[in-house]
Length: 336
Image (cartoon, rainbow, N blue to C red; front, side, top):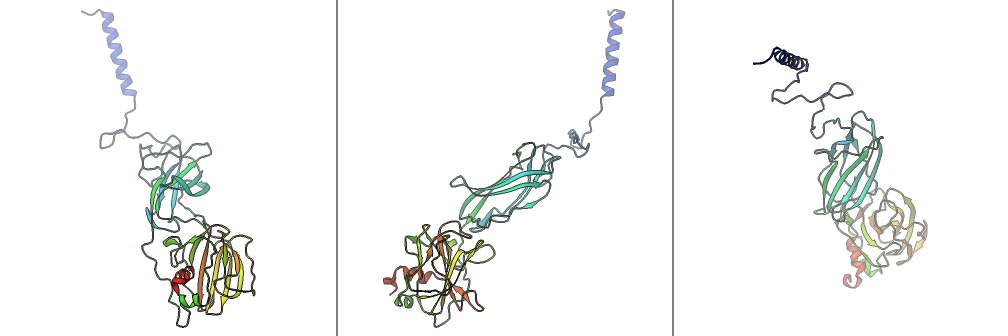
């Protein structure tokens, strides 16, 4: 039998426990029985949920990629359009970068420093002018840090990485009409003493180097001849130099020759300082013009050789596929 003192102590403990339970705030429960997430400390609103749907704003205390939009498969050439959005709680800007890595070599092939960009806003990435992707598999990766040095969070659904497959063109579409009657055939130009325009080891590359291959907003108007930097470039036929100039975002240093057989030739991406001809100068077949380089919009040393009918960039003038002529000049005995 309890003493009066024991009964009193037990009664006091029960009363205190009931008071504590009554004073504790009840947590709201959703219809599924779970407990509501705590509120955002800075505003008292917007519950801090344990995860977010891809593409929705995030409340992370680290930068998080909330949108990474790019085609996962594209044809060789310019990289496809890329849209990026980075979010972070209470941070207005982050320092960001996009890197395209070849999965075959595990090395970066394109790097774009976006600089300090606004959070909570989608940004379309501007690729470098010379950026070209060849057939293969790539990883497009976003990295970022805020002014506190906090790096990009690699959370599920917000990894900031996507795999990109680049395919070779299945076919090269015809870009222009064939040359009109009266223009010499490849065999006829060989009979006239035509020579190959690159005086050294070379090759014609792949589908992306062909006439009519897709470029950024247009089709390739010549045939690329891949060769070593500094290889001599010569005139295939005798003629007169129409112009020499420089185009930073395109042909680089180039020369244009007018022949007496209805063709104009263009020689693009010459090595800087290597042009040895000027407008109005006569040149013989095999005469020196410049040396092969990679000036302008080029990623490797080569000669972009074009044949124009009706005048280079003239009203009614247009380029034709030069490959048949190049192959005939490369092996004149077979063409004859």
